[in-house]
Length: 473
Image (tube, rainbow, N blue to C red; front, side, top):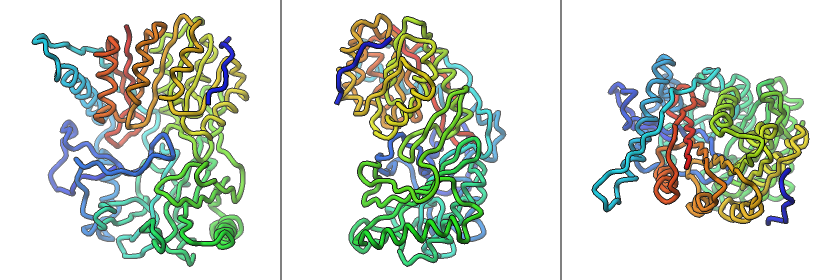
C-alpha cells in the first residue's frame, strides 16, 4: 500500500497545387482542432506555418479545402500513412541527436540510438474523434454565424469558417448537433464574439464530446461581455428549450452545458459550466474499467487507439508488484487505474481540478484502492510527492504532458531520485522545441538512455502521431 500522504496543497499551410510528399517534413500540417490537455491552454499560432488564404475559399470548394486542412492525408492509403509516420518518428530521433551534440565541447559525438518500433495502427480510422471543438465566424457564403472550422488566420482577419459536414474523422452525431446549434444561434439576438473588448460579441465556440456507446455532451461557450445575469439565464433557457423540446430535440445531447467565459479559455473554476440538461458527466469504458469525464477534463481523442496506447505504455514500463507508478499529467487517471492491479501503488498529478475529481471518483468505482491523485502543477507537487515515496524501492515515472512539454524543474527532480530508473515519456508533439528540450535534458543531465521509441497512431488521416519514448538508466 502507498504511504499516507500529508496535505499537498493547427494550422494549414498556404494553399498550393504542388503535390505533398508524405515524407517531406516541411509539409507537416498542424490542425486547428483543439486536443490540448488542459482546458486553460491558450490558443496560439505557429509562426513557422503559413495560413491558407481564407478569402480564396468558395462555396463549391470549401469542404474539400477543409478536408485538406483537417485531414491532410485523407487521400493516402492507410498503410502509406503509417510508413510516413514511421519516417517522421525517425526524424524526431535525428532531432534529438542534433540537439544532444549541438553544444558539446568534446569532438566525439554522442549517439542516441533507440530501437524505433513500427507504428501501432489505430483500430478505427473513420469517425474516431470523441471530441470536436467548433468555432463560429463568417462562412464561405458570408453568413456571420457559421459553425465549423477555420481556413485562414483570424489574426489577419481572413478566416473563413467551414462546417465539418464531410470531415471523415468526425462522428455524424457531432455534425448534427453542431448543425442544430448553428440554426439556434442564427435565431439568437446575441452576435458572434470577434473581440474580447466590450461590444465585441458573445458566441465563442461549441464543443461536442461523445463516448463509444454514442452518448453525447455539448458545451456552448459564450462571452458574457456586459450582459446581465438575467439575460444570460434567459439565453440558457432558450438554448435548453431549443434542444429539449424545439427544433433540435431529435439531436439533443444527453448532457448540455453553457459556459460564460470572458477569456480565450476558461476552466470550470474561472467560469463554471452550467448544466442545462441531462447528466453532468460522460462515462467511457476501457479494459472493463469505467471512467467518468467532466466537461473540463482531458481524455484521449481516439478511445480505441487510446487502449492500444495505454497497453503499450504499461508493457514498456515493466511494472512489478514492487513498483510504484508516478503518473505525471494523469488526466482522469486511466494509466494509474489500469496499472493498479500490477503495482504496489500509483500516484497521479494533474493541473486541472475537475480531472482530479474525476480521477478520484474513477479510482473508487474501479476499486483501485492503492491509487491516489493530487491537484496542482507538477513543478510544485513533484518534490513533495517524491519525498513521501522515500520508502519505495522502484519508481516508474510516466509523463504525459501537453504539447509544450514539462517544466525542466520536474525532470530535474525525477533524475535526482535514485529509485527512478525508468521514465516513459508520452508526447503528442514530439518535434516541438520545448518537448525536444525535455528529451535532451533527460539524456544529458539525467544520464538516461533513450531505449526505445514507439509511435501509436491516435490520429489517422493527419500527420499527428503519439510517441512513447522509454528512457532507462
